Image (tube, rainbow, N blue to C red; front, side, top):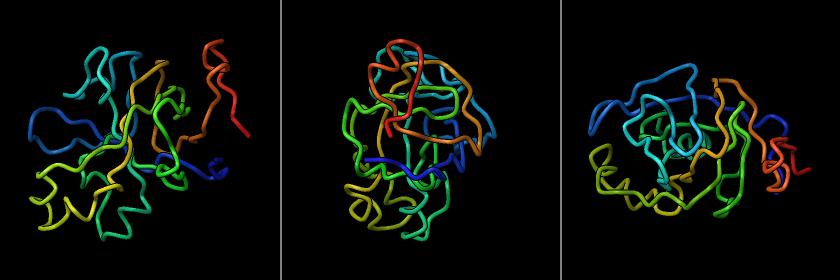
Length: 157
């Protein structure tokens, strides 16, 4: 799988607290083995540090960025083709995919039936492997594992 050269971050959000509205930001610091600074879900060793969502899925469902409480909205990247252990360079940070995000009942608060509609399409959860800034407009690309171990993320062309 290869993302197109136009895969980008189109929106960024932090969750300031339980059930609080998502906070849109233009840049966020991703801290290794922690998550996004200022996000209520940031904690060491969590498999749920960051939620990635595809803009294309939001568009197909008539939703807007941040509607399903994702942290990072991506455009032009096939999230549905990722598997646990895959790694992405998002801006300066390296993220490791941990699992698909299962839609919760809270999705039905946004729109009745949305929980079921999102099943298998709510995005992917990840943890932060390498700290760095993530900004709106940043490129997104898959990286190979051996390249991230050396601190030199290389695109898997």
